[in-house]
Image 1 (cartoon, rainbow, N blue to C red):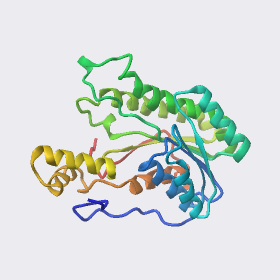
Image 2 (cartoon, helix red, strand yellow):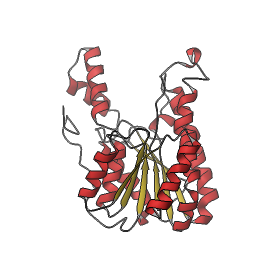
Image 3 (cartoon, helix red, strand yellow):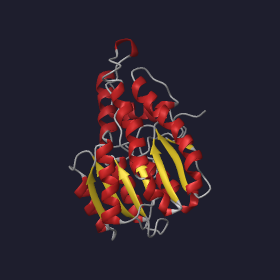
Amino acid sequence: MSTDNPTGGAPGSASMNGTLLEGKVILVSGLGDNLGRAIALAAAAHGADLVVSARRARRLEAVADEVRALGRQAWTVTCDVTSAEACAQLAGYITDEVGRLDGLVNNAFTEGDWSRFADADLDGAWRAPFEVNFWGSLRVTQALLPLLGDAGDARVVMVNTMATQRIQERFGSYAASKGALATVTRTLAVELGGQGIRVNGVHPGYIYGDAVEWYVGHLAERDGVSFDDKYAELASETALGYLPPAAEVADAVLFFLSPLARCITGQSLGVNAGHHLT
């Protein structure tokens, strides 16, 4: 399957060319093939220049070229968010080469090894998601505070997960690290609001793309059913009846980065087609 919604009926992204972020510079950390790329392109389509960063350079230039094709500037920086030194170097690069920063999207993450708590290596596999998802997000944010503070109306968006509310077996280390991130998002909103820095989180569920398509196919094969039947089963768990593609999740991030969210901070927004409602 290559469509965003193999069962039909999922709307496309609402992102269109506009001026919501005209003149802004946005950093997307943990850039990848799916959501990070979609966020970068949505921001560029609305007038932002982009700094894109990841631990490996594999995808950076390709996405930067897509941003430039939209008429915006793009800078690429490799950065391991688990390294305080690397985060400081990232901040130094933006200060020297770009000169400003108006928004930060913390998108770097790892899911861990899906081990059950009883069998888990707490100092190894269970600690790893905290190093990236929690400490990594904090390291990047702290390193960039001088630039964000200078902006006077800056935005930090933490890409979180539905797993913090919809607890499942084997997702303990991932959910715990993201749960800690959700709590500190509120702390940062309180502490940084005086500098004009808004801090919010988005909580996607399944983001339909290559990885989820593979997962649906794996489940279908395991259960001896068709791909479309398995997709329909998962989609039926949502209120809207489909699994959102990355472009639609990116629209929610775009909202938090934009002036439309000027009075919003410290919030956690579910972006999952109503997969989990509390």
